[in-house]
Length: 164
Image (cartoon, rainbow, N blue to C red; front, side, top):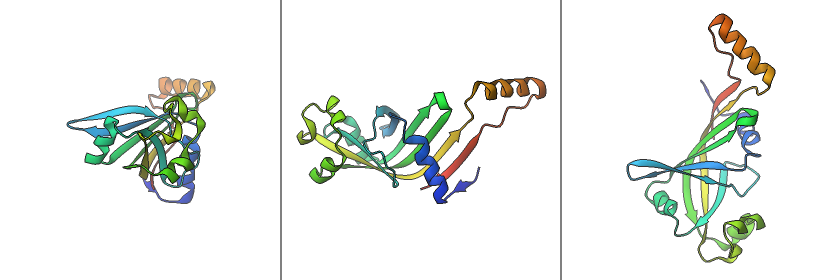
């Protein structure tokens, strides 16, 4: 699989993740990986993704020790899967908090955007991989029939690596 660097590939990554509400954020913790569901707070993508967290959350310390992060997006109904690798930075910045705050975040942060324990995770994306497979029942039926008759799997759809 070749690595794409063109703007269309970057736009494709955004088009695949923009409607996925929750990503699994994976960090390194001692000798193992640790994942947790997270909601990105922006609905635009310029190579940076933003998430809110608590300043004393375990992931904050994990990112201080090792900033590498993997975000995994999944939409099984549409057969869309995206992984984004990057680097995480923990920030406490009132202007950024105000800029990224959405009232729906109060569900997890009841004290609102003025909560002194509120922090932002800034993820600078470095690369992505996506799998955008056909999702209709007819395509699956065709794929099954092809596999049974020829012993060959169906084409998986659009698959690419993207350097961000």
